[in-house]
Image (tube, rainbow, N blue to C red; front, top):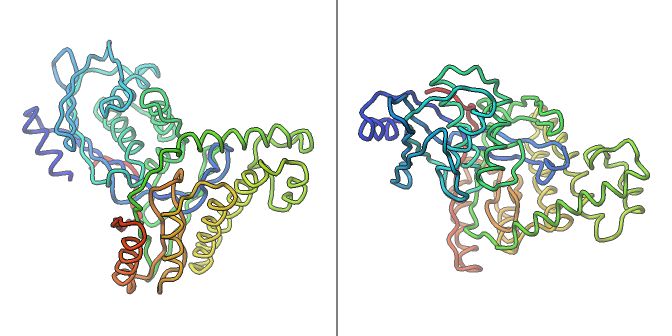
Length: 381
């Protein structure tokens, strides 16, 4: 992909570019905890977005998307990002960097990636990070990684209309090969944890479904968490969010919250606990425990937070009963997307065959399989 992007740049703009790469990510555990300032456990992957860039002597910027075979031009002094258009991610980052006081000049840019569309591997954050890093490298702007992550998050929120958290751009920037990041979404700091997969690997099963109620359900779940905090602060005045409560507080929390709210709060509280347990299990090279935590996370997302769907639940059950699988859980916002599985290398082929047959028979859909390797963070290549 680096070669394709470079050759495309030479073809379109007849100049030698600087090239950067920003990876996508998986989230091992810690779902729907970020907006309660909780803990997440992402890892950068080898799939990602490549950006080639060079200065130009024009009065406007030219950008070309290899994946869409589209060129777009804009003026740095007159950008108007359009929701849903790929160029909005480029203009959004330019806007944020301008506002931060970095003196941008006109440039040419080509972008392309190898993240499967709709896979939940955070291609949008990788794109924002890649564009931001490319501009920083091209003009020698001394932008700290954390600031670049925050600019990427803000650009997505303001110019792509995505109310995203810090996890995705942060994981893309701070990733370390063969390591996950135990990320505190309140302090925006992390601890690196080595992933000793040995004879196992992470394999994503793409359900090929995306149910329409995902966005409205997300807003409802977020509102339920915030309402729970408002109620609980009267009895736990020291808490700011649900992340400040422990599993040992659950019995009292259950007494204080309405039945409609308690399960959602329970998920966030127990999921934050599972993040720390998973980190400890990896440090102890206990993959069996990691697998058990994946299962527990899925059950909580399905039963307490209610963000799963029949297709994903079917895949989780199928995976759980297949030889060589230590654990599986839905990954991402919910109501479709991918199942993250921890599978023994020697059983991957038979696992794929079993899952394909069962899923096709049940839902008349053929799932995709995405083998993900944990890789390094964004960098010049």
